[in-house]
Amino acid sequence: MRKLLLLCLIIFTLTACGTSKKIFKENIELRFLDDYVLPSNLEIDGTTVGGLSGIDYNDGTYYLVCDHPGNPRFYKSKIEFSRNKIDTIIISEVVKLDRNSGFLKENTLDLEGIRIDDSSENIVLSSEGAISKNQKPSIFYVNSDGEFIKNFELPDYFTSTGIQQPRNNGVFEGLTKDYKNEGIWVGMELPLTKDGSKPKLFPTRSPIRITHFNKKSGKADDQFVISLENISKIPWLYFAVNGLTELIQYAPHQFLVLERAFSAGHGSYGNTVRIFNINTKNATNTLEFQNLRKQKFTKATKELVFDFKSVKKRLTEGIIDNIEGMTFGPDLPNGNKSLILISDNNFNSLGKQLNQVILMEVIFK
Image (cartoon, rainbow, N blue to C red; front, side, top):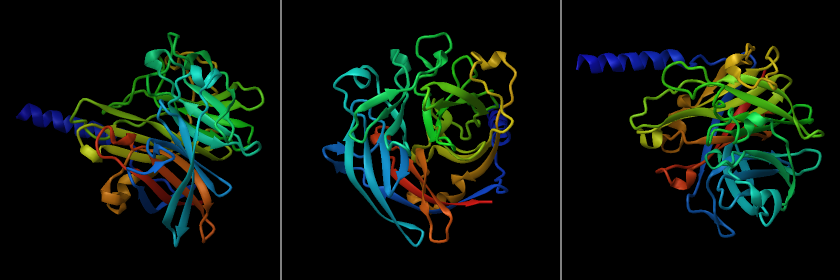
């Protein structure tokens, strides 16, 4: 019994010391306003609405991407607010990707991120592929009908065949337009295999690459690194993960990054979800580094700005779900920007989960 108590004390100490807890509000402040849960049996044009892993807002319409590899698609929807609450969500249309030939037929499309290009109004999508099956990740454009336009060229270390390669289900998870509208930033969910280990309960070196792809050249031209937080809950069953799920650039050198941790054995309450402010001003461009373990570099700085644990009791059924998507929405009545987040319910294949939409207020300082 003494040994068991000592082990529990050590784990608690490592966990308490290894994760960020102080909330920083000097540059940006986030406030929770409301959440809304879509029915789990909602169907649109013969498809079940679920697996919603990304969201973007453009000209009054929200675009929700679904991560079902067997039927890759995105939805168009309206989200109406009333008195800083979510009043109504109407999903009006589903767009299925045209996989009859070419790039979309040849690649595994495990879609995770979606952004609307401001100049062309085409849709940028990111896919994790299937590394365990030698199916590479991808970033590509489709038009409003789901027809392929073009894809970005990836550095070799993002492919599925080299010595340095991504982890399965840990590739291109976050996607954001850059501040100058010259390209997009894409964030890895987990470190590349040679860059560092996956996060654990105890402190680890878990750096992830966030890469800029230029729209004109179609190639990567910049990159910075942040470190992932540790696992924050003891996994009573043998599985735990923490990774980046979304990012938004909101000013030069400034990003919001969403991290989601999950520890098995807690039922519907295994998620820890936090939002960080990232400053890249002094960060090294690591694009040409083949192995981060063998290089010296300066990471981007990282500050915790919101922890969903603080509003757990205000969420539907007290559940912090598998939140994966994030976008700025329209201005609120007081002039502040809205922030909308969405969860991936995995089609309830892993137990009870929610199609959860969250409304927040952003205060820039």
